[in-house]
Structures are given as structure tokens and as C-alpha cells.
Image: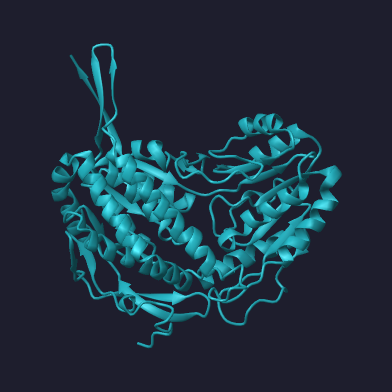
Length: 484
């Protein structure tokens, strides 16, 4: 096997990872099948990991079940100390993590360092503190209401933020006293191996965290349908989320689902248009548009529409495609050839539907190697069109005009999704009033920063439950009423 990424880009230890992590040990899988890991910037093979099987899932779930009594009985201080050691071990690997994500996902190194690694380290640090708190108890009449860990959690995570999406599940689950079996995406599994190297160094008790790489139809299905998994926490597509719900329903298991999005960025006529457009374009193109919260619909008042289109075209022209390790690169590739082809299909359909091409498009120049799609902007997008309704998950922005606030709210809410969104106005009270009317799980006013302690999750087909902070931790707990 010829592995293409040079050692300076990818730690040698990640090139041939042929084991699972079960019961605190690196252990061989039940089958010798392997999954190739690709560098999407070049299309070259960079590593291989095991193709897990249902038998591997059985072993991992059994290990997590055996570890649950001891871990759930540990004191808050003990669990916090374990998470603190994990935080230290991951922090020591921050550079390797960022480089690995830049190679296997194609995320520009600056983004990989600051967001892809920096954010999950912040989330884990927050949960060191949350885990140390005494369990919340309350008296309701003659009842003592207590929270207890739900049990064994199956965590199934996507490729677009391969460390953050894992940490948003592992940190609260462990802080609550649950044990976990993780199935990372088969497109970006190497980051999980670095994480589990840190787990080993941190000395977490055997079986508390377990790793089974593999595909969704094999390992994901086995984990979601396993009779000894008490809860499934999944991030990914709405279609797969619905499948997981059906599998979990057979045993009435709890699910937490963070699914798709088609978020609206509402720019009211009195807004600072230059800033709103600059930030809005940056959000839409973040991680090459492979972000569930991306503001992929920009809604602009008709009186400022032409001005906005000029600002958008200028902003997009500054996004250079290229090598993630080149300091001038602002957009990397899409994660795979299949993903790039899907995004190109959305672009072709938008053109066929009559949307006006403002920037990019199918003929825009891109690097000759890798799975690149040029940042693309369409104007005059009909609110009911496919481009305005379907999650593209690529660097494509739809710009839609509106006549008044009521129409803007109606367009923003005209979606089966409801994950995120934004409102811009010089009048913060007016912006807040609009934010309250949007049927979505999060709204940013005038570019307010992301808060990793606030609850994260969506309305409608964007999912069930919440992640992050005290609300995310509560998802991994059962409520018990003790009458006295």
C-alpha cells in the first residue's frame, strides 16, 4: 500500500491503525476488512482503519455495560479529574490533531487549529467544571427529584467537525456518568485515533470509552439497534436520523439527534450592510460550506439588494481555494468526490431553475487535483426552490430579497429545518423581536459570538434534544422521583 501524505503532515502513528479500542485496550477487530482514508486535497490514500462488524459492536457494548456501574458510582470530583487529565492529554496533541484534520478533511490549517481543535478543547474544559458539580436535586412536594446517568451511549458522529462533534457527545455523557461506544465517520476516522491515544494516556477506567470504526450501514446500524445501548446520540443527515429513530424505537431507547439545517441570515434595511455581508459570507462558506449551522440563505431588503449583491461578489472573490497547509488558503476541498458531485448537482439545478449566478458556478476555476468546488452565489432565488429548501453542504449561498419584516420572517421560517440563523439591525430591540419569531434553535444578533455553554440543537427536522452546557449534559440523564 502506498500512503501518500508525507510524515511532516500526518503523524506516522496514524498511517496503519488496525485495531479497535475496547475495554481499555487496543484490540484486533473480528474481521480483517479495512477502510481506506483519503486526502481530499489530492485524492491520495493516506491511511487505513478497520471496517468494524456487528461482533465488534457487541464486544464494545459489553465492555461499556461492564464499566457502567463503577463509572456511574464515581464521585463528581473523580469524573472531573479524569476529564481534566483527558483535556491535558489532548492539549498536548493539539498540533497533531490540527494537522490530521487538515489532511483527512481538507480544512485549512488555521481553521483546523482555531475551530476544529480549539472549540472541542473549550467544550471539554467546560465539562471538567460541569462534571465537578454535585448532581442537581430538587424537592417537589413530598418528592425528591434526582438525576441519574442513562447508561450506555452509542455515539455516531459525522466527518465535518471530526473532533468537535465527538467531544460534544463524549464530554457530557462522561460527565453525567454514562459509558460510551463511539463510531466516528469512516471519512475522517484518524482524528478519533489521536483522541483515543489521549484517552489511554489519561488513564480513563477500562470500558468507559470504546472505539469501533466502520461504516454507517454496518457499525452504525448495529450500534443504533443494539439491545444493550440505552441511548443513541447522532449527528448527521435527517434521513439517517430518521433511520436511527426507527431502530431505537424497537426497544424504546432514547435518541438525541442533531441533523440538517438551511439557516436564514436576515439583514434588515437599517443594518450595517457591509459587516452583515462580510460575516454572512464567512459563515456560509465556513469549512467549505460543510457546516450544519451555515447561513446558506441570505435575506436582504429590496431597497439594499443590489448593493448587497455587489458586496457579496467582492467578499467571495477573496476566498482562495487551495492546499490546506498554504497560509493563503481560505477554502479547502470538499470531503470526497461524492460530496463534490452532489454539490455540483445542486449548482446545476439552481441554474436550470433560473437563479441568477453572481459568483462561482460550474465553470469557475478550481485546483486540478482534489475535490474542490468554487464558492458560488445565486441571486433571485425563489423561496420554494430546491436551492432555498435543500441542504447543499457545500460553498453555495442563496440570496433572496424581501419587502418587509413580515415577509422576511415568513421566508426564513419556510423550511423543514430549524437549526440556526441570524438577524442584523441597528435597532437591537427590533432584531430581538425578529429573532423571537424565527422557528430555529439558535439565532445570532449582529454577529454575536458562538457560546459553547448555550444549548445547541434544532426545531423541526433539524433534530431532537440539545448539546453543550448544562442542557446538553441533562440529555444523558434520567429523572427519578423519590416520594418521602
